Length: 345
Length: 290
Image (cartoon, rainbow over all chains, first blue to last red; front, side, top):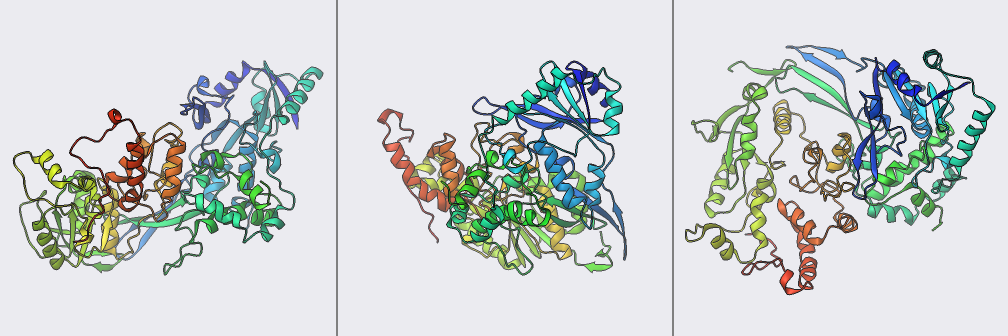
C-alpha cells in the first residue's frame, strides 16, 4: 500500500481529472420530516454537488452494478425462428466519488457470489470491472453496526481511500490507476504528524459506535433457534414489502420474466431484483408456496445473511450498514432481531 | 388486419373484444385510446366489436368483455348479466369494477336518501348502494388501478392472446417504489398506503411524491394492523388512515373495523370541532349482498 497526503482543495482538481467519465457520488436529497438531511448516490456533474461529509445514503450503491431491473436479452421473432441479442449494459466506466467502507465491503461480498463463483455473472462483471472507486472515511451513525460485522474498514475493493485529517486528506493508494491519477495533483508523502492525525482519526471513530450485533457462535445459535418464537414476533410486524432487501447493499436475489411485445415480433427477458420477504418469492409452479408466512420469510433472510453465507464463505453477507432497519417502517432492525433470537432483551 | 396472427409459427386466434362501462368516469377506456404509440399494434392483436367511447359499430359477438365501472343502478345489473352471458371471459377493468372505486364512497353514509339529495337536489334518479361486478356475476380476471395502467393492460392482453398465464404482482407498492429509488414518503411526512397496496403500477403516485391511496386494493400480504400502528407512529390520525383506506373500496372490510374506533375518537372531541356535517350519519355501513 502506498500512502500520500494532499490538501483538501486538491480534491476539486481530482474531480476535474475524473470528470471525463460518469461520476457518481453522494448528494444531498433534502431533509426528512424531522429536519435530518437525506443523501443518496447520484450522477454528479459539478464538484460542489458532492456531499462528501454525508452520513449514509438511503439506497446502497448496489444498483450501479446490479440494477433493480435489467434487460438480459431481447429477441427478434420471425415466422418460425428468432434471433437473440445480448447486451451486458456496460457502456462507459463509472467513477464512484466517496464510498464508505461498508459499501466497499458490500461490493467485495457481491464479488464472492457474482464474480468469483464457478459461473461468474457477465452482467455484473462488466459493470464491476469498470468501476473506479474513491473511498472516504465516515462517522458512525446510530444504526451502524459494521464494527460487529468486521466491515468498518476496507482492505481491498477500492482504488484510493481518503481520510479527512482536517485541511488535508490522507490517501491509501491501492491501484496503479489511482497512483497515476494522484501524480497529477499536488501530493506529499505523509509526515509523522500526518500519521499521528490519521491514527487519532481512526481511534476517535471507534468510540462512536452505539449499535452492535453479537456474532459469536451466531451460525450455531441460529441453527438451534430455528423454531424460536422470536421469528413469529418479528414476522407479525413484517409488512412483507421487500424494502429491506431493496436498500440492502448485498441482497442480490432476483426473478426473471419473459415478455412478448404487443406486435408479437419482439420479446425480452428481464431480470428484477426480488426480496425473500415477498409472498411470491418462494411460490413455485402449481401454486405451492414454500414460505407462506411472513415469519418464515423474514427468518430465511436472516439465515441467508448470517448463517448460510457464513458457512459457504466464512464471512457474513451483512455489512452492518443498518439501512434495512432505518428503512423498515415496522422498525425491524438486525441488532434487535438477532438479540431477541439470542435471548437477550 | 386479415392476416393470420401467429407467434413463432404458431397460429393464434384474434379474440373479439368489447369494452363496456357501468357507473364510472370512463377514464380507464380513455387510457387505452390514449396510447397512440402502440394503438395500431393493439388493434392488430384484437378485433374490437364494441367500444362506445372509440367507435360507432356495435356487436354482441365478443369473446372477451372488458367492463369498466361499478354497479349503482338496477338496470346495470341486467346489462352486466347480459354481457356476462355473451362473453367467454369477463374482465373487471379498473378499481370501480374491481372494488366499487371512488363511487363506493357513498356507501360510507347510511342515509342514502341524504346523499341523493346532496348530489341531485330536486332531480333525483334511481340509484342504490355501490357494488363491484363480482357481487353479481363471475369475474374471470381483474385489472386493478384508477386509472388502469395501459402498459399493464397491453401486457395482459398479449398474454391472453399468446396463451400465457396472466400474473399480478402479489407484493406491495413499496417494492416498486424502492426500485424507483424514491425516498420513503413517510420519512418526508406524508401518509402512504404503499406498504399494503398491490404493486403493478410501478409506484406511479409515490414516484411523483404523492402518497399511495390504495387504488389497486390490498396486496396478498397486506399487514393492515401494522400499517395502522405505523400511521399513528408517524403522527397520522384514524381519520387520515380511513380517508385513504375507504377511497377506492379495496380495503372496505378492514376500514369497517377501523370506523367504530374513529367514531369513538371523534365523539371524544369537543362539540364545535366535530367535522361531521349535520344530516350525514357516519356509522358503520357494511355492504349488503343483494
